[in-house]
Length: 205
Image 1 (cartoon, rainbow, N blue to C red):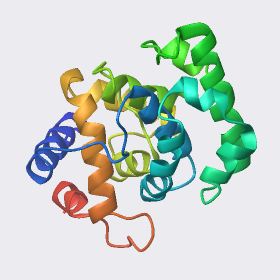
Image 2 (image 1 turned 180 degrees about the horizontal axis):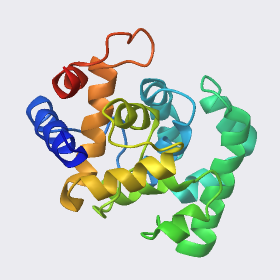
Image 3 (image 1 turned 135 degrees about the vertical axis):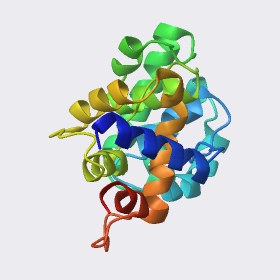
C-alpha cells in the first residue's frame, strides 16, 4: 500500500468517525481563540476551558486585557502550566494588538507570529479556525499518529506539517487536523497505547 493509499483510508475513516467537528477551545471571538490557544501550550484544552470563563469575563477583548496588570492575569490563569510566562505574554500581546492593529487580531501568519507567545502552530489554529484560511496545525497527537500511520518520517512538527499538506487535499486541512486530534484522544492516547489504534490495524493488519 502506498503512502497516498494509506492517507486516503485515514481520510475516509476519520470522516466516518467525525463527520462534524467543533473547536475544542471555548471562545466567542478571534481574540479569545488566540488567547485560548496560547494558553493551551503544555496543558490540556479541558484545563484551559475551565479557567478561561473568568479570564474572558474580565478581559473579553484586547483593549481590556491590555488594561490588566501581569499579576492580575497570572492570578486568573495560575492553575495552568507556565502561568508566569503566559501572563506576561498575554499582556504584551494585547498591548501590541491595541497599538498596532486597533485591538483586532490580524489575519496573516507573519503578523500573528510577531506577537509574544504566538508560534506557528498557534497562528495556524487562529488562521484556520477563526478566519477559514487553509492551515494544518500539528500538535503532539497529529505528529505521533502521522508517524504511526507511516505518513511521515518527520523528526519534528514542521516536517510532519509539510508531509500532511502534501498528502491531504487543501480544502480538508482545517477540518482534518481537528479530526486527527479527536481521534488521537479517543482511540490512541499517548500513554497505554501498546496495541495501536484501529486505523493502524486497518493499514498494517
